[in-house]
Image (cartoon, rainbow, N blue to C red; front, top):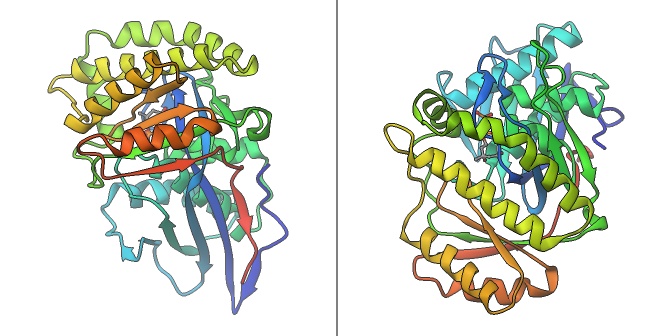
Length: 343
Ligand code: DP6
C-alpha cells in the first residue's frame, strides 16, 4: 500500500516529500481513451510492476514560487513541455484538495532510459502523485492516489501497486471508477522480466499522440475495444491460477493486437526496429526449444521477455546475442509506490 503520511517535513516554510514508484509493463494492454480530457482509458489493463526500474521524485511546495518547476534527470523542463502540462494537472488537483495555492519544485530521476518505451511515465506520475500528496499533507487512499496518477498517465495508475495490478476503464463520466487495484502480490507468483534494450533514444510519437491517432484512423480500433473485456477476464483468471503458458500466450496476443492497431494507424506507427523483430524470433525459438518465455513490447522498440526466475539467465544470454540488442536488464516483480524517508 502507498502511504502518504508520516514523513512530511517542513523546512523554512517548505512542504517536502520524496516517493519512489516502480515502472510496470502491461500484460493486457491499454491503448485508446474514452475521455481524453480526464485521461480515462477506453479499455481495462493488467500489468506487472518491475523491481529494477524506478523513478524517485521529490515534491517541495514553496512560498517563493510563482509557478511549478519540473526537473527531470537533472534538466529543467520548459513550461510548454507535455510532461509539465500533465504534472501541472496533478499538482493542481493536489492544491485544490489541500486548499493551498503554493507552487512546487518537482525533481525526478529515473534509473533507466526515459521516454523509450520503458514506462517512465508510469513510474514518473505514480511517484509524483504519492510525493505531492505527502508533501501537501494529504492522506489519500491508494485508490484515490491511483485516480490522481491516472490524470498524469493512465499506466501510472497501475504503478501505485506492487506485483500484479488491474486498471479498470470504469463507466462513470468523472472517471472516479477508472482506478487500479492490486490483483496479486509479487511474492505470490514471482516471475522475471528480461528487458532487451535495442535503442535508448526517445520515441518519435508519444503514447498519448499515438493512441489518439489510432482511435481516429485504425479500422481495427473498434474490435480492439470490443474484445478487451474477454481478454482481461482470461488474463485475470490465468494470473490467479499461476498458469504461465496461458498468461504468456495472452500477453503475446495483446501485444501483437496492439501493434496491429499501430501498424494500421494512418500514418502508420512502427515502433519496432530490426532488433525488435530479431528478439521476438529469439523468444519464439527459445520456447520451441522447451523454455517457457513470452515477449511483450510497448510503444517503443524494446522487447520484454517474461519467464521464470530460474530461466532468466538463459533468456538474458540468448537476447544479449541478438544483433542490435545493446543491453539486457533482468528484473523481478516490484513493490508498491512508497514514500522514502527524509534524509
Ligand atoms: C503501450 O499510459 O503512457 O504502454 O495515458 O496517454 O499517458 P497516457 O499513455 P500511457 O500508455 C501506455 C501504453 C502502453 C500499454 C500499457 O501500458 O497499458
